[in-house]
Length: 418
Image 1 (tube, rainbow, N blue to C red):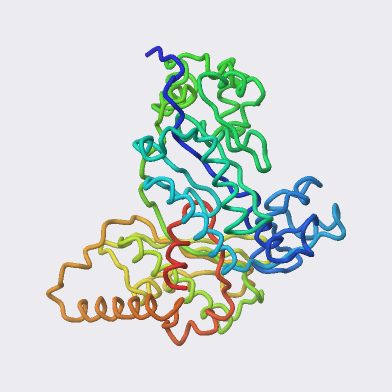
Image 2: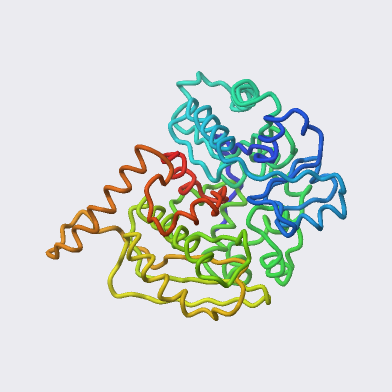
């Protein structure tokens, strides 16, 4: 295959909300504007930055840095705990604005999404997408908050639209197509490209490819056989030239939750209510995605620095909170109980489409399904996990709702049950 750079009209728009969580806090509190701030799920000496303001980033703060590390660089750094209702509002408002311009909107994460304008040209009477991008930026300022800023990128495929959105941060608006694509590649390094981290950079370097322009000029055969050694190389060959290869629905591989303990302990009276709450909220994620699980994986981190885990596959799929907790607890009780736990988690895997619509010949199975469905419906109607096991009560009070990164499935569940 020998493809030219795509000359299709750029009709994909990528929108990225700048430093979303930190900016939302600065929008809510004027006194924080212009200051280096960060957001974490729960403040402690060893907590990590999960989002940083642009002021903090400019001083060297990176996501994942511990609070004590940041304070050595910035003594007056301000760390805040996450405030989910703020981010719920921002996410819903951004979705509403984007969906006013096309029915084909995909949220890639809580703070970024894609608008596909194919088939909408007549509706907008040929308005340039750059004009629409400016209009969306203004609507974000008016409808979400005057301090909120978004990056808008426009391209012939999702990859180039995302690259364009990051070209001139913050508050940028750029379009990449056949007229300026080589200019963009010349101004960047390999690891600036979305999806190319150090591991892939090393593979490219080994094949004599050191710049994005050399990446673009490499043959399909070189990328497929020599660099990536799979069909991924062909995808990159097309992706770099502006052809769409990323408009696919990914299959859900697992669901789970984890928790850094608020009190480090080896006492079951402290640990198990929190663990059971993790299991029950994981069960709700499982059912929200309309899948059942066959595998359970549990793990713990100890104060000694050791990591422990165990997993088990089951012949029969399961989905109820009772089954999930029973199977997970059986495994979790195998941990070295004398060691103090600092973090723990559960993951359900080997997911398969739910068969819950099929009535069982066993009455006990049907009763468990009906009870689970009833509890889910009550929670959906009256509040965020308003019904749960009594043993998980302490866990509900202590396990703070985390703001999920990456996909938005669990976030949509939290909004639905809020």
